[in-house]
Amino acid sequence: AATNGHTRVVRLLLDKGANTESRAAFTLMTPLARGIANGHADIVDMLLERGANIEATDRDGKTPLCLAVEQGNPMLVKGLLEKGAQVKARIHNGKTPLHLAA
Image (cartoon, rainbow, N blue to C red):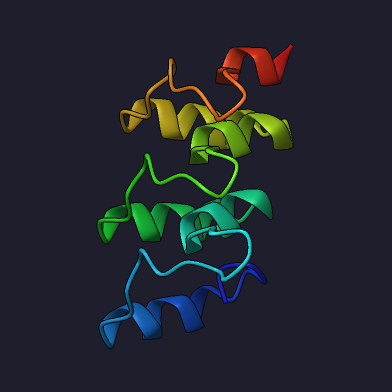
């Protein structure tokens, strides 16, 4: 639901106790990461309000901030930074969000 932008479905699932930290089998992406990767700001906000881990990493070590930077989405980047995302986080290859933006 987070991947496809189904806001009402995400809300319903969260209201029924869905785990915000569940991970996709291969990518290890959380619903927050999937929402960011697909540019669904409303879902990202909802997941963060419900306690999603802003520093959860995927199989490559990318944080939600790294994914937002890769998407070139300044609105999501700004929102994550305002909510305390670590700007100096490094992915497995040692790159930071700034490296990914350059």
